[in-house]
Length: 350
Image (cartoon, rainbow, N blue to C red; front, side, top):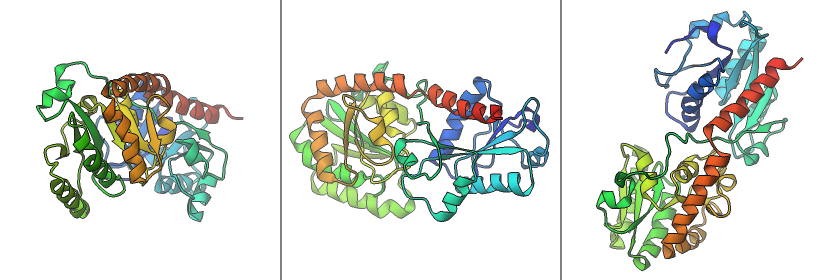
């Protein structure tokens, strides 16, 4: 949906064609921000046509102030977007202030640090990502759309509706690859499932060409253990949301992440979580909602999952607490409001 620069106070660029966590954040946030009265638009490829977006020719009008504001805000989430903002503001002297949201869980390279120092405001998506910044920042954690991810409500939301074996399901969703720890999940299931016949393991997610051999090795392991009917690799599914509702336990075994939304998606679906401490997982999963283990530690992951399989009723109760936790602390509306506070601080700063 093309909009005019004249009705835009904040620009959220998206300079990457392929779907990513950053793209997903923009897609979810912008419609909500618009509903809250924030005149925000995006620019760049790879976004739904329904989002309010600017054509590149609109950038030529950034020398002019927006109505009622001294400048516009350029809200970058990638290095290339910071570079573009700096060029527009400092080289072309356009009336812009720059914000960067950082999700990285590592030391930044010198060039990235230089870019970040050029920002007018910096947001960190977690305390951990903020710890790698060399400038003042505000932590604003990602939220979850509680209208999209919801607890079970119908028979279709139950595991029994799938007609797969077992009474309960434990899930691991996301791209099938080493970085996501899918192999750690499979190893844990091979060890545990023979002792817990009521449980079935579900793996969903895309396997790209470069990771096909990895997936084949997982299938070989599963077959060697004789568990082909109890550890199922479903590939991409039409609607992942219903699978979050069908599983009683969700496992997020990533070796590394930027932020990682899947535990929030699971908890919003009333599902308990076992996660590694990759990304922001440790800040998302609290006592009573799940368990966090060291990333890459397969033994610790297996031991953490075991009590959940032993006591399904307790696992279900923890899912209820997880839902309460997300509804209270991680609604997407809270993230949008907190970001707007940063915008307003810039707009009103003398």
